[in-house]
Image (cartoon, rainbow, N blue to C red; front, side, top):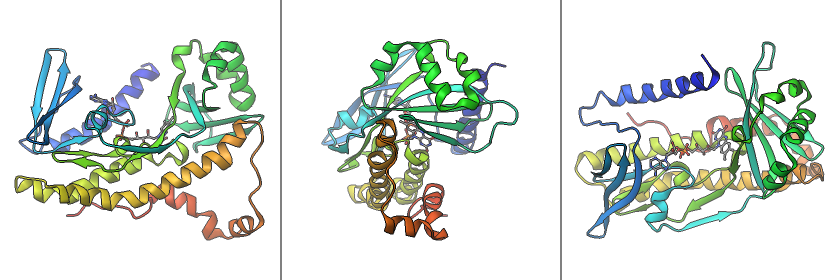
Length: 306
Ligand SMILES: Cc1cc2nc3c(=O)[nH]c(=O)nc-3n(C[C@H](O)[C@H](O)[C@H](O)COP(=O)(O)OP(=O)(O)OC[C@H]3O[C@@H](n4cnc5c(N)ncnc54)[C@H](O)[C@@H]3O)c2cc1C
């Protein structure tokens, strides 16, 4: 079995877990290979979506449409919801290298020589993030694949002999880093969640956790109103109120990390040493452990209400 096949299987298993649970509800229906193209509006509210399938265009009508279509959300754009955001000074080249016996289990980061490279353990391969100053992608590609392989090998010498696995630029995806959020996450009949409501940067790896917590907060706030037949604006507002503060704090921390750590590291300036009071605070174990706690548990975590 090839690694792409195994990856598909892993994400397939996660999807299976969710759908098996959902199938316990007789009204649940899952439609794959369906791409939303348009919102259906009527009477001042969103009434559903029009979408493309291999069998043609279809329409789904709903009391509430939930947009979880990620950081390039078409739905939030069509709904005319206002986005506020910052422009992080970095982008990421995203590719895989194989894992071998004896490789560390933990995610690993390498900083130095104007390079910032992160390796995330995805079982049988490393998901590698090679951070660049914003807009530098064209220059890297123009310099050629061999130069890129060499640069990766210099940043991660332990894996230098694996860089020839990068055979084609098609294996290297540019992920444009965004940090933004909607002023209002909802309109009558529509609620945005996850990156569609607040695009997160990869820093800290908190985006998936936050998106799942949004979904839990929405279920807690909306299950009863939807069972009663309608979700009103105040119910949708309650979801945003519950989630907005932790997200704003985390986006603030991500922006700080972009400016103070990542951008100087890839700009060749090295990471500036924190001021003395900060260094003193970092000496305290409770402060040192704080980032791990925030990444692992989030700020003001949400729990499923029985
Ligand atoms: C380079 C990079 C690395 C990251 N690494 C991490 C990490 O290691 N850990 C972490 O927690 N977070 C990470 N993040 C952030 C994380 O990816 C997001 O915060 C998280 O995936 C948001 O989840 P979501 O469900 O809202 O959106 P997504 O995961 O983006 O899911 C959106 C889904 O909607 C689908 N979709 C889009 N448009 C349509 C349409 N029109 N019709 C139908 N379907 C549609 C997409 O195909 C996709 O499946 C990273 C981000 C970047 C940029």
